Length: 258
Length: 283
Ligand SMILES: Nc1ncnc2c1ncn2[C@@H]1O[C@H](COP(=O)(O)OP(=O)(O)OP(=O)(O)O)[C@@H](O)[C@H]1O
Ligand SMILES: [Mg+2]
Image (cartoon, rainbow over all chains, first blue to last red; front, top):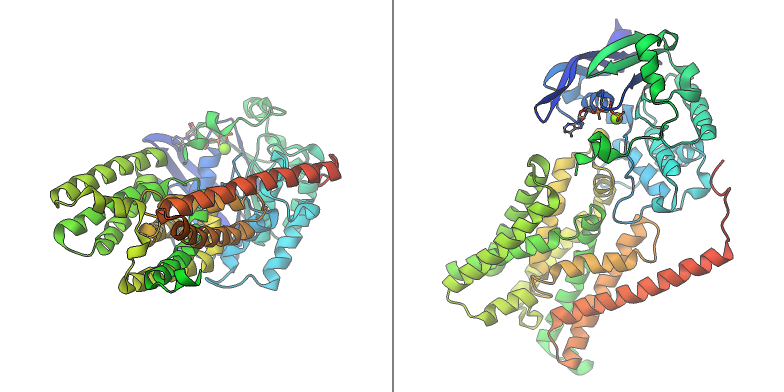
C-alpha cells in the first residue's frame, strides 16, 4: 500500500482543452517507481500537452494528477520532479553560462535569498559532465549548437537530482553518439530508482530501456504496452517520424506561449 | 570640480545619480533577459499620467506617479498572462494611453509645457532633500531585491515554464519585476526623465553584454556602467551646460559603442588565436 502512495505519477481521466478545443480526452497514465515510460504519438497528438498538464503548466478541464501520492495542486516537493521542456529557444536576451542555466535546476533545493551551497555546485558540475559538456561550463549558452543546448536543458533537469524525470523530446537534435550516452546515463539513473516519463518520436538507443510505451492518437490513448507491441498502425505511427528533423516550434502550435 | 561640489544642488544631484545609475540596470537586466526591453518605456509613459494627476489634484507628483506606474505595470503583466494580447501590443497601448492621458491632464491642470518638460527629460538639479530620501530608499529596495532574488528572477526570465515546474511562483515574480521597474522609473524620473528612463535600464545592459558571457557579470557590469553614465552625465552636463537626462543617456550610448567595438575586436583576436576546433566540447 505504501508503495502505491509513493507512485511518482498517477494521472486519471485527464482532459485538456486549449482555446476551447479538446486536445486531450480522458488520458490515464501511470509511472511507477523505477519505471521508464515512453509517450509516443504523431505531431499534435497531445504528448506535450499531457506533460504540461501533469506538471501543472496547463490547467485540466477534468481528471486528476497525483505526483508522489499528492494531488498536483498541493504538490510542494518540487525538487522530486525534473523537467526538460520541448523547445528550441533556450537563449534569452542576456547571456548566461551553461553553469548558470544548469544551476537554475537547483532552485527547488535552495532557500530564498540563500547562496548556493557546495552540494548545489557539486550537483551542477556532475550534471554538466554527465551530458558530456564539462569543458563548456563557462561558455555562454548562445555559443553552443542546438544539440548542445538541448543537452544543457537535460543537465538542468538532472541537476535537481529528481526522483521523476519528465522529458519532452530530450533527444530532438541530439546526435546518435550523444543519444547513446544519454541512454547509458538514464539507464544508470533508472537502475538507482529514478522514474522517467519520456516523450519521443524516435526511440533509437533508448528503446531497450523502456518498460512500457503509451501511444497517443488525437488526444486519446491508442496503445499501452511493451515496445515490442508497437505494431500495425501504431508502429507505422512511431516510425513515420523516425529520422525526420524535429518540426520547428512555430509549426506545431507550441510557440504561442509568449 | 571642487567648485561644482560646493553647490548643494549638485551634491544632491550626484547622490540621486548614484542611486539611479545603480538601480535602473539592476532591474533592467531582467527586462532585457525577458525580451521586454521596452516595458520601461511603456511604464514611463503611464507614469506621466500619474504625474499629471498629481499636478491636477495638488498631490506630490512622485506619489501619484508611483501609484499609477505600479497599477500600469500590474495591468500589463496581467494582460500578458491572461489576455490574448501579445506583450508588444499591450505595450504599444500603454504608450498611447499614457502619453495622451498625461498631456490631457496637464492641460487640464493648466500647467505649462515647461512643467511637462521637467518630467519628460528630468530636472536633477531641482531635487530637494526630501526627494533625495525617497529616491535613496526606493533605489535601495530595488537594488536589494534585484540582486538578492537574482537566482529566482534569473530562472523566471530565462525559462518561465521550467521555473514554474521547479516550484517558483512565476506570476508573483513576474509582477514583482514589473513593479520594481515601475518604482525605478519614478526614482529615475527626476534624473533622466520619463522619456529617457528606459534608456538607463537597457543601454548599460546592452553595453555590458558585448563583453560578457555570464549573466552575473552582465548584471554587475551593467550596474557599474549605469553608475558611470549617471554620475559622468551629471558632471559633464554641469561642465558643458546641458540638460543632465540626455547627457547621461548619450554617455551610456557612448559606452555601448566602445564596448561593441572592443567586443568585436576581442572576438576576432580570440578567433585567430584558437582556430576553429571542431571536436571542442563534442564527444
Ligand atoms: N497554446 C495552444 N493553444 C491552442 N492549441 C494548442 C496550443 N498548444 C498546442 N495546441 C494544440 O494541441 C494539440 C496537441 O499539441 P501538443 O503540443 O500536445 O502535441 P505533441 O504531441 O506534443 O506534438 P509534437 O510532436 O509536435 O511535439 C495540437 O493540435 C495543437 O495544435
Ligand atoms: Mg510536443
